Image (cartoon, rainbow, N blue to C red; front, top):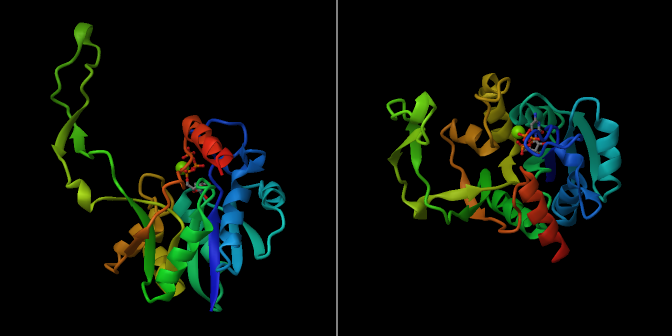
Length: 245
Ligand code: CTP
Ligand code: MG
């Protein structure tokens, strides 16, 4: 029984807009990828780690992760998150029965959350995601081509039209790490491989590829502090949460 964690860190962090890849940006003096790796290692249920690196940055990523109690390998990621996960999955040998996929962009994920996900997979649920209730009211929209234009022919303030309002009580905001039976995740990535090349087609999480196989995906309670760092505002908030620990 071996659990391998794939830690995705190959993104460029365009929306954060720094001159280094997002995974190397520091919180309290520690690179995001190192914090995320430590959370996985500290869970005590991860045996090995594969970190996906931006091309040409693997030495920096390895140095940033530093030494951990688990075996760490670094692999070049791909052009999309899905392609990066597939590259990491290529290093999961037949000895691996459970695979976790986690984002360096969620450096505050607690070891308890990691253990909860792995426990659910080991309990027989072959695909497991951490999820949180949604507090905002969510609306589904479409582009509104018929919107009246604003003054002087400039685009008006209205660009979209609401289609419907899904019942909030049945929605979950899902996080990582997501946990899978290795064979199921490999099949999901193989079947979904044609989507991996382009950002607009690629799956934004691994569970979606499993759902596409019509295989069940289960939810465990997520981690309210494990926010995803996308913008400078998220980073500022994460630094405050980290200082509070
Ligand atoms: N990721 C990856 N390979 C890619 C793209 C993303 O491994 N080709 C990783 C990122 O490093 C991150 C996670 O997937 O840990 C989630 O992606 P996201 O938050 O979108 O990060 P970036 O793609 O780096 O950011 P942006 O979209 O703003 O460029
Ligand atoms: Mg991205």
